[in-house]
Length: 183
Image 1 (cartoon, helix red, strand yellow):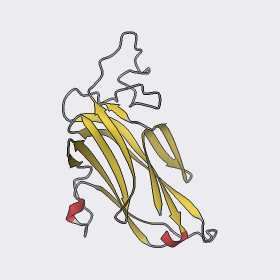
Image 2 (spheres, one colour; image 1 turned 45 degrees about the vertical axis):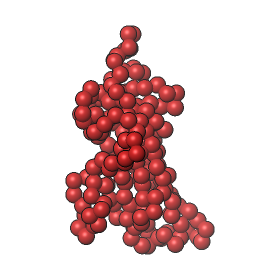
Image 3 (cartoon, one colour; image 1 turned 180 degrees about the vertical axis):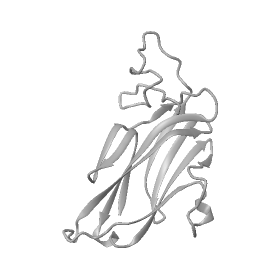
Image 4 (cartoon, one colour; image 1 turned 90 degrees about the vertical axis):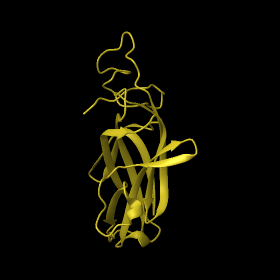
């Protein structure tokens, strides 16, 4: 089993396919000038399942970590733990899943299991570097890193809702910094 993670403006799953918009964010700016710094992001996760991973329960955890100097601090994504969970998982997003075996699946096949997790209005405690880590059954599958920047002042000539306005969502491949709206 494997999983790939993308940080993006928006993601959704429809018809068994993952639809992603504004993928590859590396710099985020908050629309709030003080803590908590609010951002609008989505996680697009593509789980890759092989025959040996089917018909068994798996545990997926998503952790958000702030990297401050030599210290790494978990940023809580959830207030509660599922019943019977390890207390060390406190603050992580936890999901249990079973990938059913399809009669069409042959040895060597790898099927995809798309997931979209919106995190609109996510409050971040500090400016600086962060990463999301996705683990399945305790093994890290992928990371998506980003840096939270201070809110950007509006530029002269910006149109409401246009690129660079406070109604857009992050930084795309072109590196244009945008702030996300508050909820």
